[in-house]
Length: 94
Length: 174
Image 1 (spheres, rainbow over the protein chains, first blue to last red):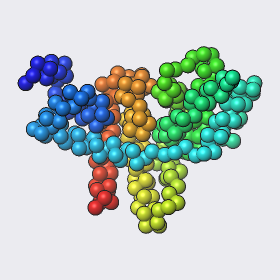
Image 2: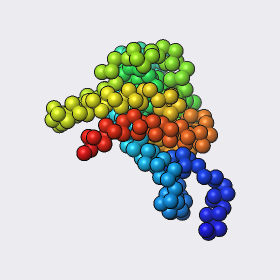
Image 3: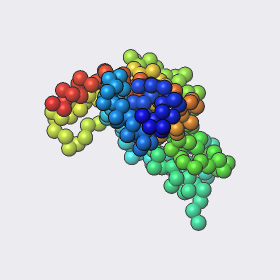
Image 4: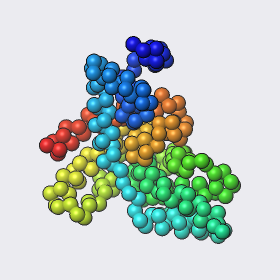
């Protein structure tokens, strides 16, 4: 075990949820990613959480929607209306 | 020279999808979501005119949207079970054949139901990070919670979605 790994583990006790969340979000440093990927080979808990996290993220991404084109126009008009001294933009729901 | 209004629109309109996705997960109908988007941009514009301008507009708009949703829209939110499901469904892609559209429709119906059944904080964390591409640091700022809490909510939300919908997705892939 390297000095870096010992320091990392001291700072971060074993926490499969947090590790998986950071790993799946791509927010571990390169070095931490290398360490974690080695760790995954023999840690069943972290491996399971990573699989679930990846699948959940993929499922969530399916829900992404594009704003309707008309909504952009409505926002532009509301901002323009407000900047020209209107009260607070066109009425909601218009 | 560009006016403040032009500058504001140029800086923020690229984040419309982000605000819309967040609004959809904070309200129970498409109409409420669109109203919330408009409110968010107007509130942001007023702040912009007061020279409160952020380094990055995405987390800033997300924060405004969340605050507005919590203070104004929550009071008139209906219970999820009362929301007609068709309001949560996206129009099918025109290029897909009828069979694919049917499969996609069912998946989306399940997906929206599943997303809506998540505790609000998990739903928000997932929307900010997985749907909108914010980092967990930015999501923590927007949600006003420590990053560790966001990581935990994010992972629990993902896990719940995976368990609810994993089997169905795997079937579709096969």
